[in-house]
Image (cartoon, rainbow, N blue to C red; front, side):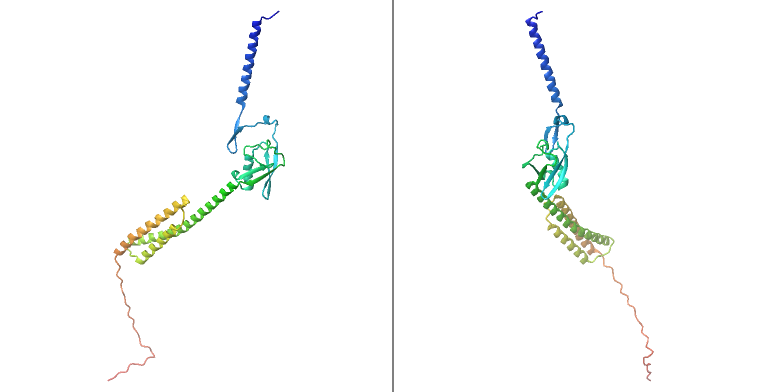
Length: 267
């Protein structure tokens, strides 16, 4: 039995449409199956799966890392990136990931490069060197921190002395408030000592450290308030009445010594 030509053409179109639909559905499923992940350095890469690598279990590698005279061995997964390896090496070397450069087979490797795709095998050797720019930035930061610590220590020393003088100002204030007069020299000397601490504060360069600068300013304000208070107390102290001193005299009597010559009587 012969099939008409028109029916043949319809059958072919139906098969083509079904094939296209199947292909589209398969492509859509494959697109939906793709997963992405963020790797060190902010690189977005397609997430690797066990089936993609062709192995049911990815082996661990023992990598020998040479850093100057230091040789350390790191055990990592074969699908680890060089950026992740840098993170592991921070504990071994003290270098931050941004300060590290990893050389394998004479070529510097990027953070997003995988160990296995770059040919890293078990017992492979990777050379670690300092990044010159990062090292210089680290040295500058260390010097800056050391300078801030020195400034903070100087301000602390002055602050301790200011606290001691503030206590003396409080004692004088209470004495005058209770009607007792204080020696004027004591107030004048205390003002001079506070001004000496103010000069010390002015000589401390704290402009580069915001926290230290604020601390220095606060101590300077304390000194200023104490000096102003002492100026007022000096005026009040001068108005205090001087208590009259009572002078008592004790008369002494003398008895003649037994060995002394007796008095002679004259007619």
